[in-house]
Image 1 (cartoon, rainbow, N blue to C red):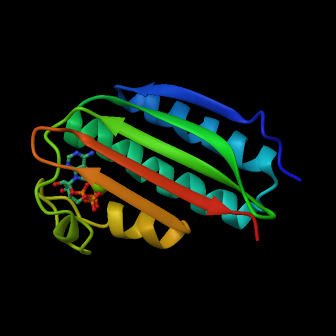
Image 2: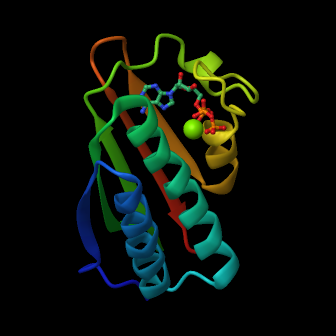
Length: 136
Ligand SMILES: Nc1ncnc2c1ncn2[C@@H]1O[C@H](COP(=O)(O)OP(=O)(O)OP(=O)(O)O)[C@@H](O)[C@H]1O
Ligand SMILES: [Mg+2]
């Protein structure tokens, strides 16, 4: 069963903070009962989304918590920044598309690794990315 006391938040503002986020999400997902493969999926997605906050918006934050739905338990992770925002979300989700000369696989890759992803963003209004993964 899940532990609904699992929650936390961290500031994202440096490469060191990305490592801290990765460790914290690994700990939370493990405590929730995810197996090693799913923990790795959640951690990999979270690391990419945290990287996006740091590299595209300089700084922001992440918060996570356990969530319940019917008889399923999952982890919800929310990334928030006040950076430049994304003009075309569909394009941003396209594999190989990057405004900064990157591989452009962070967002589409993350989407594949988790169960649900919501991306709220507009130019000048920052970006909020919410992901959820459910225990199978
Ligand atoms: N938090 C964010 N704020 C502003 N723009 C973002 C943010 N996250 C993603 N983007 C935009 O979406 C594009 C695609 O993101 P994605 O993570 O897929 O690729 P990338 O970060 O450019 O390269 P990488 O493959 O190294 O992650 C980025 O190039 C950027 O324009
Ligand atoms: Mg990226």
